[in-house]
Length: 305
Image (cartoon, rainbow, N blue to C red; front, side):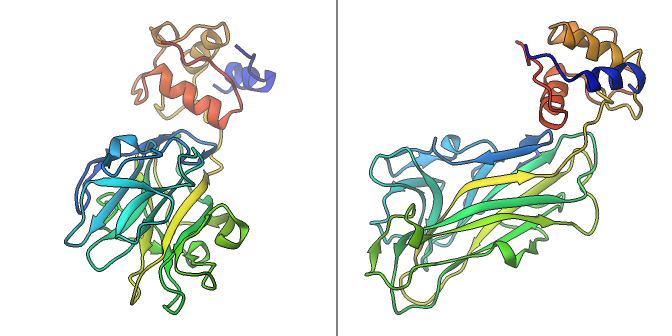
């Protein structure tokens, strides 16, 4: 175990799901966000198959297919298919994948992720970045296709419902309308747009325990639509290091400080938390404490069994 910074040790001694239903509805489990910068490159998506299920998606990610042909599965493709569908895009069987869709009159697929604020602190702002990739040109003469980025902190939101807020700076429009209709290589510079992180400030903070949805909403244009995807996504809420490990509202050297010292000695699990939780503790599991410390406090504590 790498020893945590001396500053954190000093602080410790002295200061110390949601489940969302979808239109053609598979259940989407939200990912716990413990702080710091998190990323997703989608390279674990399937490289083949036409009936891949949501269980093969990265943690927190999901899709919602509206329309008469919407279903609960998605396909792997190199952009050759013009069928309305959710896709794992990539070249052949390459493991360099992107998460995308082709919109049609019978299938409109919304892509997105659900996070739960598990930092112990309100999220007052967050930054989102990603790369948009075009894997198919449907019709050079058609209007420019687009994925619209939106977010929601509505406690009752799903990917397909709830109060969502537009962030136009993160909308992805097809970058290539000059090619011949058909598959494209979304990894080529001509067919992609890199979005550096955009800072988003909600009208009110997102409390600890509340969900945050981010989604890419398809736009149905006349004619054959393009194959659009997202890749290399990042999220960072700049969450402060919170040494109230048990989240009972105050930092106590006899509870939080004791658990911190035990962890620094290499203990994990209940060996950290036994007889050390404060009155009114709302976070009692060492795993969740360690995830937050490692993400937001620049430590490298062992999660343990």
